[in-house]
Image (cartoon, rainbow, N blue to C red):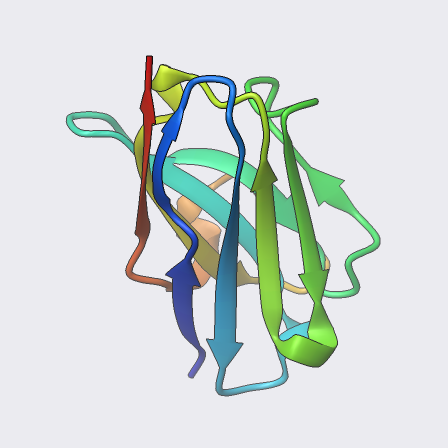
Length: 124
């Protein structure tokens, strides 16, 4: 079992930045690849970023490339999402999730453990 707790969300103006954190507890953190997803009201959960257990490989959708950066500190059992150049359309609840250590996946169903989410609101 892995418990995930997100933090760092909030209200920010368009063009601003936020850094989300996801603290993990339970099993060996480096055994899990980690992903960030987001879900806006009335929309499906959307892939934002993923990183392998070692941190050597990452994956982003086109909407996040150049603006968002995923990273992790295995010694601190924490994964981060640095978000720059935020836009009003980035407004959503952001979730972190734990899955396979070596497979980067865009698919929510391939992640076994999920956090409770943190709200990000970007004002225009």
